[in-house]
Amino acid sequence: MATAEKTRKKKKLMIGGVVLLVVAAVVFATFGKGGSAALTVRAIPLERQTLSNTVSATGAVESSEDHKVYSTVTSPVKEINVKVGDRVEAGQVLAQLDTETLELNIAQSEATINQSKNVAYQQIKQAQKNLDNAKKTLEAGLNSSAISAESGVNSAEINKENAALSLRTAEDNQEATEDMVGSYRDAYYDARSDYQSAKAQYEKAKKAYDNSVKGTNSAVLESFNRQIKDAQAGYQDQLKNVAVLLREMQSCERDLNVRTIEADNAQKAVDADPDNTELKKLLDEALEDVAKAQENFITAEEEYKAADNIAENMQLEIIDLKSQMAEYEQNFGITEAAKALEAATQVKDAAEAAMLSAQSRLESTRTQIDQADMALDQAELGKKSADTSYETSLKQQQATLEGINQQIESYEDALTSSRIQADTTAQEISLQLLYKQLEDSTITSPITGVVTAVNAEEGVPANGVMFVIEDVEQLEISTSIKEYDVTTVKEGMPVVIRTDAIDGEEFEGVLSEIAPTGVKNASGGAVTFAAKVTIPKPGALRVGMNTRMDIVLEEKENVFRVPFDAVHTAEDESFYITAVVPNESGEKNAAPFVTKNIPVTTGMETDFYVEILSDELEEGMQIIPSGDVYAEGTPVQVM
Image 1 (cartoon, rainbow, N blue to C red):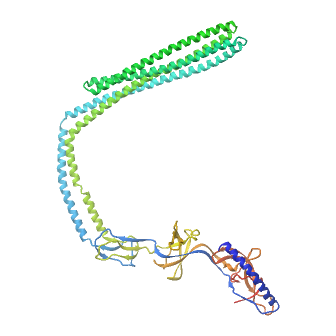
Image 2: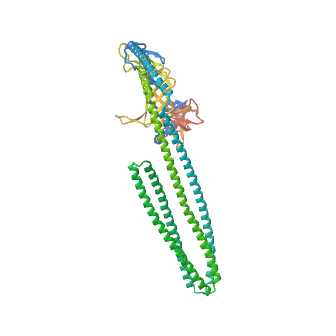
Image 3: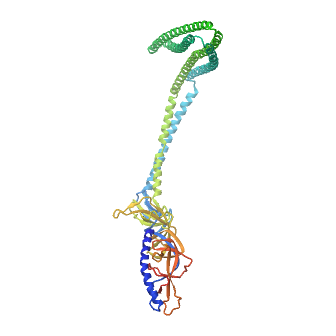
């Protein structure tokens, strides 16, 4: 019962209780004056009982395991060995089908297989004889074609190994060239470090020079410095341009070398096959590529030399500007600072030139790398050509051997064909299927249980479900849980089972399964959830019995329980019950009993009862179960 409902009920009881208290007061006053009237009440003895909170359900007993027995053979039923209600063991014969026709088919199939095997044996014997004779004939002589083919393979294999050796040599040379480039790279990094150090010394000398020229015509010196700086900047840019043109010239040179090698290879191919027009066409195209590459190289070389001449002239112009500036500095007495600056400048320029030289050497080594790469490419081409020749010789040898072995293969094919024809696997599988049908003609029970249906008839071909076997030792009940109860029940809860067929006896069950989704009733719209209850000890229960069940949500044993109406609420919101106790006033004509209110606390609740606890409670004590409220000490008599 919900708390709000209890509260409302208790409020009603309190209102009614005020009226009863007034009546009780009048009656009590009458008894106090020696009257003989007393209220008649109904009382019940207080007993310790088991209090259970349950959800009700219904369902029919059914087997948890049943098997429908079918037959894969459609032969007529010869004999049926069981009837409905018989208990059978797993493997026990239920029926026997007529196997006379099936046994004749098996005998015919076995005879056909034996005949096929005898014929195949003679064919295999002859084919094997032909193959053996052919092999002996080949092994007895020396075949010149086979010897020549093998010699060609050996020669090609030697050339292949030599080409592989050349390739490894080219790879080693390329690796050595890359190591040299690494050393040049290290030298360039050292030169760059020296240049950075010299540049720092130059900056220091420049600062000293600037301090010494104070008071002179700084505008003139600044003009000289600016012209020199601009000239040096232009010179550095020109050096970079020269380096770029050098790399372009080297690239054109590498391309010219590659095109020349390709033309040489094309020429060799034409020399080897002068009448091949396709090879001549490829040679003409290769020569055109060489001419274009030669023209590109000459153009790049001219551009490089012109740029290099411009760089030399720019360097002479810088030297002339520095000479003019030195003469001006001598006239103003700042020669020492100027010399120191000039010396630092020369060291810086020398370090820069060394760095650029190291950079140029590093760039120039790329030609050697390209040459090593070219040699490696040529070695790879040579190896590829040798590999191709070797593969060609192997194919030629294979073709020769195939021609020699063609006759032997034809004999082997004949032998294989004879063996295939001798294969009776398909016939034997058909025979096994007949044996399987013979075995399946004996219908047996798949489980231990009770026969609940027999659909087979003697003399009628087996078809559909012949028997139904159910395990009556493992029983369960299919039921449903209402939507408003499904959140309170859990799988594994105990279930109390009752049936009208076995009056007065209860059976234990367990809620073993609750469907995850509900089903809506088409007529009423109510939603229920399918569930199963397993019965560990079915006892006298039988399949088909209708049952009533209580799913035990909560249970307490040996507690005092009373109807909800028997518990009242005092003004301080505490709870009490009303007991009927002997009247010990000793007055004449006094009522035999009076009421006594006993404070209690409540515990577990069900739909109709509530647990009460108090040290004053005693088993057998008479209590008033109704919702009527009586004043303490009201005279009463028990009906």
